[in-house]
Length: 119
Image (cartoon, rainbow, N blue to C red; front, top):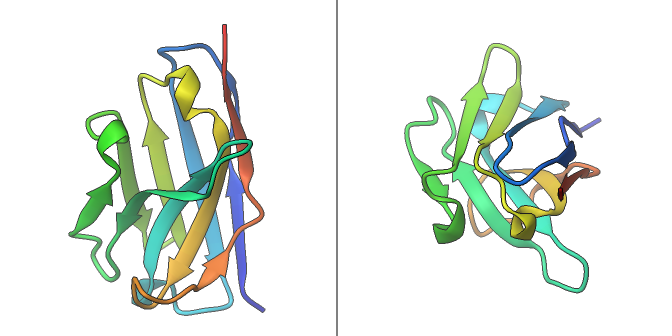
């Protein structure tokens, strides 16, 4: 069955870094766009970054994370990553991994990993 398993969340001080991982199984990983979303308490889930299928040559970033976050994928490990640097308190949220064939499709979701940014 399809599984997306996130890891790498935790507590970090402002200015710190975290690297999230999403291990995929149960589908052909290279066919899918991979995205990272986040949801803070009382807010809607939002797209943070997305990477194209195959070689991952196209990436999208939400404006507020540009220059600080980097999305990547390793097709040999069926894994997507989100490197988060210069973290701010407003980056705190549950981060979800998503896989979809097209941007207008819902796709599959992971269970989420909590990111807390606090001193």
